Length: 434
Ligand SMILES: Cc1ncc(COP(=O)(O)O)c(C=O)c1O
Image (cartoon, rainbow, N blue to C red; front, side):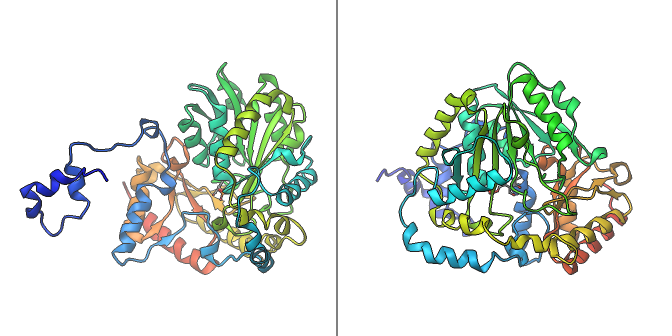
């Protein structure tokens, strides 16, 4: 082993290090330090950033922090259906080895059938790729697509992993605005105005995180029209497609674009409350002939990561078939529905806060009257709320929203808990001035 810290050991000052200094300290006194890649300098991932770190510090110091920041259903008492767990246990010994790189045939067949039900055109088993969550596949598909300076149209606000992965792949994220005045639907004129000769693709997140919006067919048709005019690929993140309320139906944009090349993403993290098992997928559809070379790239990267978690793949067929227990949460009397009703009314009753009613998923993205509270830095606002009320939310700029006038609430906790959170917010906003 390389004796790289010998200098430190022989350094007489080493023995003088006060007892409060952590054991790692000597390593930083060597000649060489290690910095992160410059590629990360422009990557924003504040949903797990400084405010969350501060909350962790407070918890380590023994404080109780109420968390409305992460869309992870299990800690809030949402359990995966028993049958899913049972079926995984049955197959554990059969899933000890690697699977085919795109995934088990049975899983991909079930996803293919799901794609048929959603009218995705021209999809065979070979067009389905499983991943360790949608997250891995977003990263993989952006890495396979982008050369330095290539542009991708992304929503603002967005789920920030998309923007981060475009940046990491050397691409340039270009944000089109989603319009709060129009149910948070994408502003098509803004989208069109931001297309250049470097634009390769449009990303949509439908249903949306962080707004909870669900895009109707007419809006999707307009996006397809833009993509058609400019020969763009469409990437559609539909991880919340089975969490839709009010009797509405989710339409996959790919079903409206048989002549274009589309990639559609979904998974079981949210619909089956198994975010920890890590299983998601992407489906290639439509005009695959125009993307032959890209697909070769996807296949190479897919092979390089060998395969996704095989035990989690083994329950896709069970999960997607039969009764969908998540539906019980989404109707009147169901937890997600009732929590949505409560949080929507309660937030709107706070002076200076307004929010559009979400139609899907379990997020709401309220607007803050920044003049009233004199807010000019929303990370500071999130930190102040955390310190004053021990309540953790994510500030709007964490979702690539440019103005400091929004925040996201995850309404997964039970109504009794949400009431406590709203009391805290009401108290905070009754006196807060930045
Ligand atoms: C819009 C969106 N896409 C993707 C993901 C990642 O999901 P997964 O657990 O499948 O990686 C999330 C998780 O919150 C999400 O909100």
